[in-house]
Image (cartoon, rainbow, N blue to C red):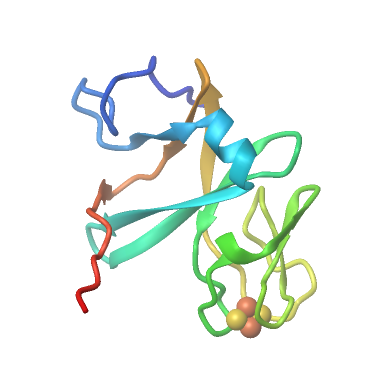
Length: 135
Ligand code: FES
């Protein structure tokens, strides 16, 4: 298993690798249960990666349910799994597999904690600014 580099002050580590992303504090993630972050994949385009805390460990998944696209960060989090808020598909937080066979699997990313920060390894990705909505 590859460990992320030591904590940096920015959102990505400064040594040139673009695969490792420092997303949030573990404290913030524990308080919310799930948080989502905007990314752009070099081939697939804009999307969100969500990080989860299940009471024991941190995990990261593509934030969109493979059934009809509901945000998994709004789902119910249980030990090692998240249940989609829209139609209750159950996904493994570790592998992204749809555990109940309701829909197809989603993408899981390697997540870890270092120095109180939540890191995700996401090859081919860059961070994107959140979309803003104007009235
Ligand atoms: S959108 Fe997730 S189960 Fe339907």
